[in-house]
Image (cartoon, rainbow, N blue to C red; front, side):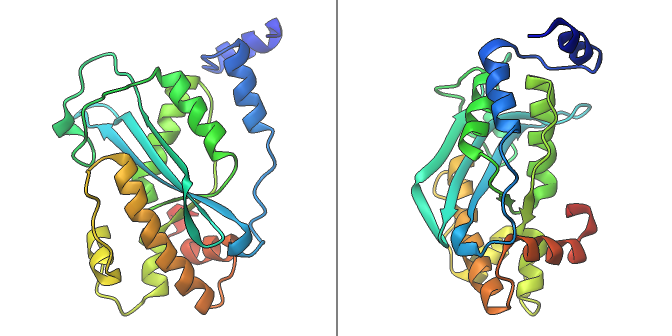
Length: 230
């Protein structure tokens, strides 16, 4: 790494990686932005869910990431990601954001985050309640890799009410019942991502019928609904 660049990064608080790891980050950063104006059928979306340990006086600490790809308006079961991050201290599963699972098969945090970026590419991220998932991932990228994570997000918590204005739903589980989708069998990030992806398919179908045929239009819709998720 260039000494001058290393000094600047150090003063700015990062990166906390070097060598091959830093090359992986910079390769990901150099990828082109997703073409948000292309039709949904030509866009790859990645639905993500996270688990985190809750602290009373500190930000949540990331425990695991689960994700599933949506291509051509369908779930792609060959396009999935799951990683449990090794923790410095034993993680109490009861303190996870969604009930949690024991950190079996955990991997080093740097490897997990870089593997996730390799998997993600620059595909738009989708979550229900991105106000929860987004800051956890952003803080984890900054604390583990020392790098900012700025990405395109779609938030089903904002989009679904816009697409189904008469549905008496607020919470994700209410939307699952409304759509006839069974909840996750296993309460872990991978299972939650799979269930949320099914809900995203419902939103995609409704968006097309409403004339919202690409990601850019969905982003504009959620911005109108909830400015903080723009």
